[in-house]
Length: 530
Image (cartoon, rainbow, N blue to C red; front, side, top):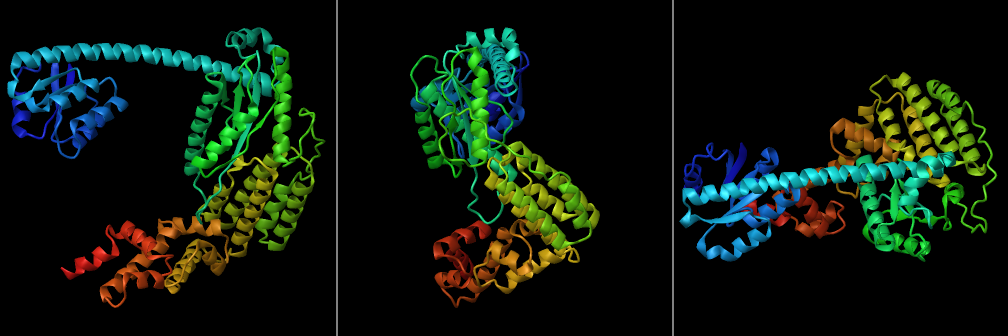
């Protein structure tokens, strides 16, 4: 049975079509009806019918818009257009949007509808076959790309040169060994707001950046590139293989950094190896890439004439520091915590070490501190959530980022231990009272954190947990409630109220007011006058 949906804003048309033919005899069943395009779209997304009979002129969303939207989301759904004689131009547009046919409402008869239904069912079968074939091609192509991706990573990053017999034919057939280089592309995510950037937001931004990087690479290298799936959350690795064609890695660097800077708030760096050729140089390319990555981590900016040079690394010498920190936390010894963190920060700052050593250190500190804090305050401990929010260790690419992480980590630990006699809801309540007391001033998260004696990030997480809304939302909603009382008194102008409440200008005040009240301050006053 083919599932059919009828969409028309005229009740008489809906009823007429429903009873015009024997739907079961035509191997169809009417599963839904709708009176406008928006309602139809919502039902289509839930039910996904096979055939849709849709009017072109409807309220809320017209038939053409509905078809274009559905074509993108569900290209296998077949449309039959319902139209009037004077709407020929709309019917023509509908056919261009892949409608299988159109029916003139005033001339609608059972044989005509059955003939068009037969045509629509045939089109449904054709589209299903095409989609099945396309899906098979897609999965076959994706499997092939995943195989190449894994092969490159094994060879380049894990010294898989012994796998020549297995991988050489695969890479050679794609022309990937004629001339190639690797790009290391790390990103930083500056956060203009006062609250820490959510992990979900950062992941969405990274996905956007990945798409922009792919499009830029396609414009320069055509299809001769591959983004390697390394699992890094704040950097990309690009393998470009233009072959013997002359190409400029520096040009790609300039193009990508300019694109990212103009479209996203992220800061992008692009480092690349020399151009290599042949199977034997894949290992050299990997060594050069790792040297580039480590030099970037240590923030060594001067050019190295031999890019494969390996820096003389030293061990950090911090074995057991996690358990030492754990003991000081359990003792509530703030001075001891500072001494340990001073030593950790000094070693990281002055010792030339590999990024992997720093990542191991941060994970060790995070694990031991979380366990110690849980023992102090029990399982319902807001500090654990705060540590998790700063411990996005996989985002770290440079030594300065490690130092920033350590500084933030120290603040969280000392905040919690130093306020161990003060429960989470007491800290949040103290912040709430600070806002109410200073409602006629500009209130920032930073100033409030200082006032209650905790770090910015810790207060942000704690406040949201206690009150179910962000600190900024609480400040703004509280100010708007106060503004409503001032507007009700009718003694001050809108501009004066905005200034009194610490808003930058009347425009921003109106924007925030509309967000919480659904109308402008002026409309709010007029509403009271009615």
